Length: 400
Image (cartoon, rainbow, N blue to C red):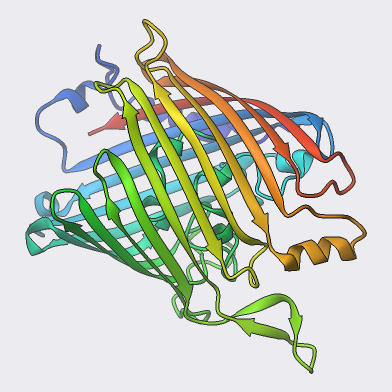
């Protein structure tokens, strides 16, 4: 087993826990006060113990961790800047690679990174306009917070449930999502009682303080344009589309000089996230999501994810949550041909099934066992299927 350097993040979290005093409700006493602080500080520390127990490329286990500390400031109270707020988000990820053992195309753990670092993940200022119905954000921002996101899929561990793989695998080094964001200008507009429209211009090259290349201020690789419109009535129903302003290299096609053919990378997606039954913290939510891309500049031509979240189903366990999901990534013809050139056969898609349950062991600590089965798109040097089991521990603190 590979054991990452978890001592530093653990000590930081332990020190942060000394800030608040915990009340009987499970929240810090400061959070129970009527008046909120001008600066709210929150933290979250996740440790994953993940093992590939059958199939894949190799059996074994890995430990991964994720430490996040955020600070949200009310700029009206701090500096007299009416209708404005600021956000800072520091991120640290360490640990081994469970997908090096599972060998999937889409990954099996949403906190796995290729290179463990401490970084300034987000730093933005947001200004309310038009009486609060419009908000303009400028800075380093995670686009998956406002785009291509299903709330009821948020507990699932596999990365494909966070954002569609056909978008996650685009751009010079990935779009502005975990583990690195990019300079962003985002507009949010409320329409009627439940409608909304979001649009953003995002630097095509991700990079933050803590990355080896730092922040790209020149936008030399162009921008990602993305928009989403929908309604939040009884959940969410939305449609989104995205497009890069600068053409990307085709994954295989070349011109007469042997240079990659340039293509316009673009795509669209549909989101459904609806509450079927229940209220007062109990019930069942259903999610369904599907996306497509140009299929020339990315390893994926599309995909879908579907599943449900059940809350409070176990008597006497109001915080217990059960979730099951199915995710399928549709491989592009370019990737399948590349696999064939390497002497293997690639199916048209990779399909994963995940089952997980989360409950609180203490006011600040949640425990989440997780099981995943993945029918891999191609076998490589191992077996076609991979079976992964894991345990996620989540510690949270807040000072508001």
